[in-house]
Image 1 (cartoon, rainbow, N blue to C red):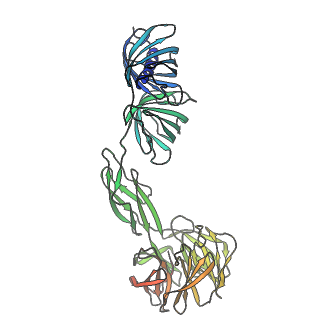
Image 2: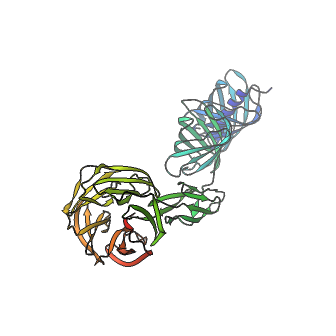
Image 3: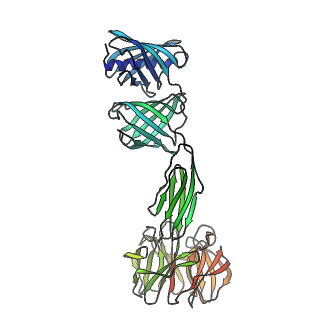
Length: 573
C-alpha cells in the first residue's frame, strides 16, 4: 500500500538527519546546516517504501526542509531536535507541518559520510529504513563576486516552488542580485555570509521581493556544488533545491583608458576571459556606443562633444575601461555683435570658418566676458556684461542658446568690468572677478547665477591700471588659482594667490611680448597638464606660447594662423 505523501516527506527528513551524524565517523554534537541524501530500502505503510529524498537542516535555527528526489516522496518542512545518544548513534525528533509531531529517527554511523537509519512515529504502526550519505564538501570562506546557479526543487509561498535563478554577489560590498529564470522574479538586496562549519555556510538576506531577514543554508557536496534551503521565520514558507557555484571569471583588458578630442571617433580594445566565462561590453553614457561579447574585441564609438570635458566607462566583467573626451573652445565677437565659436583640436581650429551661435548676434551693447558652465550641465554658457552694467548669461546647448538669465544681483557699476570667470574658492561655482577702471580688483562668489555673500576685494585691492587681468589658472603648482596679468606695454606676470590674498608676483620667462599680441585666454593644447597662452595679433594672426609653469618653452601658430581681425577672441574654454 502506497503511503500518504505527508508521511513520506517526514520520514525522509528524519533519515537525512541521521546521515549527517555518519559524516564524522562518530555521532556529531550537532546537525545544524547539514544536508543528507536518504535512500529508502524498506518500509511499511503509512511510510514510503521506496525512493530517495534529501533532508536539509537550517544553520541558523531548528527548522528543516525535505525535498523528494524520486519514488514519489513529497516535499515538506518543519522543526527538529537532535540528541547524541552514543559514540556512533543519535536521535532526531521531528514535528512536521504536514504530518504532525512524534516522529523519531534513530541514526547509526558506519563511516564519516554514510550510515543507516530507522524511522518511526509514536503511536503509529509502521516504519521506514534505509541508508544515507552526508554532503561533505568544502564551504568557501567568501562568496564575493561569485555567481550561483540555483535549481528549485520544492517551495512554499512566499518563495517560488519551481524554476531556477541566478544569485550574483557583488565583487565588493554586500549587495546581490537575483536574476530570475522560469517561475522566479528578479530581485536584489544585501546579504551577510558566514562559513558555519567545514561543509556548511549560511546567508542572511534582505530581499526586495521576499522581504527582510531570511536565512539561506548551503550544504556543500563538493567545492562548487551542493544543496540549499531557505526559510523566513517571520512569514513562513521555505524553498529547497540544489546550487552550482559557477567558475570565478578573470577578465583582462589590453588597455584601460583612451582620450578623445571634441570630434569624437572610434576605438577598440581586446578582452581575454577565463574559459567558460562570457561577457558583454556595457557603456554608462549615451554618447559612448559599444559592440562586442565573448573573447575578442570591444569596438566603441565616441560622439562629438560640444562641452569642455566628459568621461564615461565601458564595463566588461569586473574590469572598467575609461573614455575621456575634452575640448577647448574659442568664442569670438565682432563689433556688430556677431558671435561664433571654434573648437581647438591641438593647435587646429575646427571648423576653419567657425560655427555661428544661434542666435548669430547680440545687441553690441552686450559684451562677451566668459564662456563657462553656469548651470552644471556639462556645456559652456555665454556670459555677458552690458555697457551700462547689467550682467547675464545665455544657457547653451552646443552652439544654440536655449534660455537667458540675469545674474542676481543683475547689475554692477559700469566702471567695474568682468575680467575673468573662474572657481576662485574651490566650491564648484563660477565666480565673477571684476577690475575697476582705476585698478581695483574684487570678486562676487557665485552659486549658479546667484551671488553668495558680499562683494570681496582682493588683498592688495588695487593694481596699476596699465595691467589687465587676462586669465585665471594655477601657475605655481600649489593647486590654487592664480591671476595672469598682461601689461599694455607687453609685460606678462602672475599674482600667486591664497584665496583672494596675493602672496607673490613673478614675471613670466621671457617677461615681455610684442604689444601687438593680445593674450586671449588659456588652454592646455599639448596635453602636458599645464596652461598655454592663446594669443591674437592686432592683424588677425593666431598663436600659442607653450608654458612649463611660468616659463615659455616654444611658440606655434594655430592652423589656420589667421582670422579676420574683426573677430576678437573674448573667451577660451
